[in-house]
Image 1 (cartoon, rainbow, N blue to C red):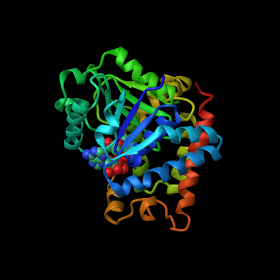
Image 2: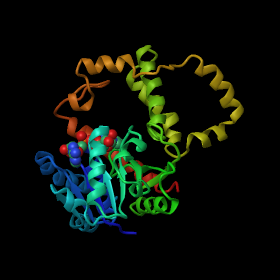
Image 3: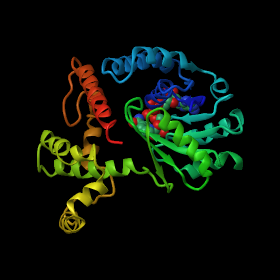
Length: 314
Ligand SMILES: NC(=O)c1ccc[n+]([C@@H]2O[C@H](COP(=O)([O-])OP(=O)(O)OC[C@H]3O[C@@H](n4cnc5c(N)ncnc54)[C@H](O)[C@@H]3O)[C@@H](O)[C@H]2O)c1
């Protein structure tokens, strides 16, 4: 099912979302207002496509065809005037998103669906600035980074949108190879980020308490729980293990685990020291400027290998 796509904001997420739609067979126009960012987009997409070809995930011919389907513009009307589906990936600020949606409501076709890639803002608040008719055609479509590789897109079905409109959006994302899930309540973090934060809270706490070194904590996760999670969901894992065991272990462990309601003090201390991770050269590990490119590429390759393997899981 090929629909005409508009993507608003060509930063980390937006350029990858546009690239994913184009590779999936949809004509996509990407609107990016900042000139410096616009200049970086096509080289970044070409690099990402080249890696997919190198790893056998896409053919060279498919990538050439995708590049012909992808257009970049600094003209918002040109990006949305004839589009079927428009997704925004502008900065995570309610005032910016409300202003954009008010604008899109006027510029986009009446039957176009408008989506937000927000990580944390309520859909109800983002819809305040659009007409009643448009509210039936608005949802959250939350992608995971990097969008070209990560299969998950969480879709909201919060009661404002008729199911046939939702089904069309779900089919559109399935048609480009994404795995969608339906989220039924307008809660911050939807599903995946809430699960991820729960794991991260305990991981940071284990480091803070000196229970193990960072390498060992990451190994325990990769070769323990996350090894199963790549193929088997938590509820399936619980059923395999036995719910009686999970109930008993839950009572014993949850009583002594971290239950804080804010980000880890250790994390905040590192941020205050300018240790932001790969982008600053140090986080929990150190990254030298000479090898950082290689480290990023190895990360993407691991995700691509996982993507290939996951195609067998259904
Ligand atoms: N980065 C992530 O890992 C991630 C993951 C999932 C969801 N998200 C969400 O996706 C959205 C975008 O995040 P990002 O990390 O890509 O941000 P980003 O800062 O990398 O990119 C935002 C882009 O939007 C452009 N922009 C700014 N104001 C604009 C406007 N009014 N109209 C059009 N374009 C505008 C900027 O020039 C920039 O290129 C946010 O809502 C974020 O919460 C991010």
